[in-house]
Length: 156
Image (cartoon, rainbow, N blue to C red; front, side, top):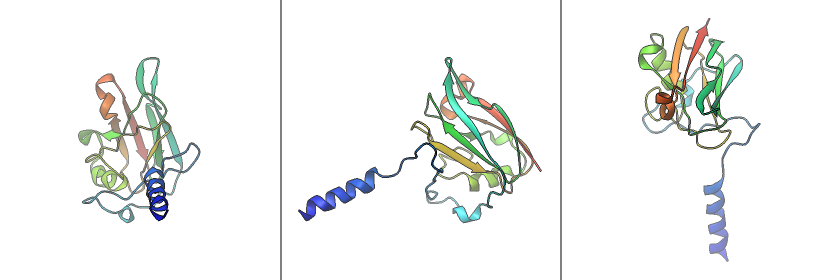
């Protein structure tokens, strides 16, 4: 009997998690070699949402252009057509932005490259607290060749 209870406990732990619509996004600790979340300045502003979709046969970010303020957070939502992610072009972000983004982006696939969101309505968010003002061009790694690109402007 105790083996059955132990097995059920392990199964519950393994199957737990997963984000629900309407629930706050939760992000796990960064992998080894990435700075801890404590190194990221706290978000102080508005949360903006950008949908990642397959609409009418096209892969898009719904808000292809977005303007935010330093301290705001952007929340990307995998609506349809995934997997999707957010990856910033190294040469199309302001000077000094790479360090800020790499600290703020948890569970990265690599530098400036967020994780792939495979679940419907999965969320990935980045705080732009401490980010330099300027234009941040980004893309979806799996769908870049299909035109899934967008731009974010950060203002003081």
